[in-house]
Length: 291
Image (cartoon, helix red, strand yellow):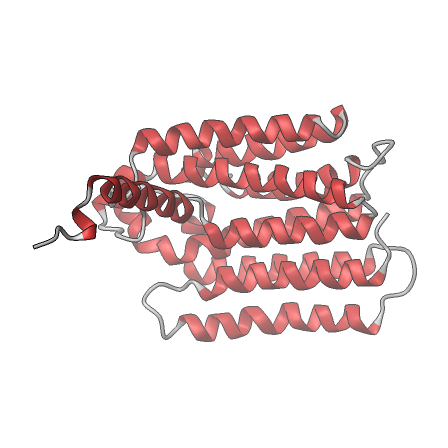
């Protein structure tokens, strides 16, 4: 009988490689990575970057997201294994820890290298965002200031995008503040699905100290405040579309809360935060009132 294709040595190697690649993709936190990169590209187009500039800033932020996501899953591997998180590739043994560690280092290096192709000021913003996010992974995740890295890293994102323009213009304060509030809101929403597991593994960040209800209120309030800042911050009166965005920032978290009541892992709140951020940036870019 002819040997099965699945048992051929070359096919075994291909299978291992495919599994490793898939594990790396899953460990990179693909949903937020894709959302943040898409928001970056839209924002870059809105502030006037050339196609090449859009590509550079988007790739820089994507590399940063990969570095942070892989580091997060690597550091959390033992805790994830303890609570049986089979959806976590490192904890489940789908991809080796050494592989993830090397990938995270390479992604961090790529972030700095790409950022330096813009200008020194923009590169500093990019490095600040990366370092702040890594500080969340360790040691700030389980402290009362766990929200701070999210606020700093998200605030640094539009500062990097704007500063990367020729002449390194200063980013508008209202844009940085709104992004920081969006990031802080995302933190409260992101932690909600892991409350039970985090309690078992000793993670006690600010959302855990506020509790589920308090975190939902804080997250929704920050998303609304961020949207209001984006609508009222630019010069000129707010548009009807902007006011609609504020209404969306109120309704979407409420719908997410309702959706999460039926699930065992309340992930709708975080997806709602990403959706609000995406809507905010799309409307902001469409308004043409950025820098």
